Image (tube, rainbow, N blue to C red; front, side):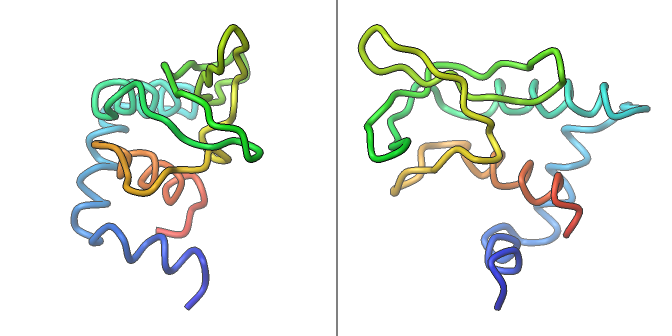
Length: 113
């Protein structure tokens, strides 16, 4: 089983389709889809949560949508902040509530659903 297939297997297809529909309803272009996913992540992922980026523990405090319409997680450690693309953000185990929305976004953005 490929890595993509394993990711897809964590969310049942019907649930994945429902999540994609929720995030992209009434979106007519890529810009609106990015905003839809950003809103879905903000509404559904429990923040803050802790994860590890480059072997350093960080707290994900919020999401942001860049001018290039890339969704990023704002990671904080002490006084330092770093934006990490949501597609590259390592998710902790156990997963915080709502992080299945991050998985759904990753599967949707890969076009492999």
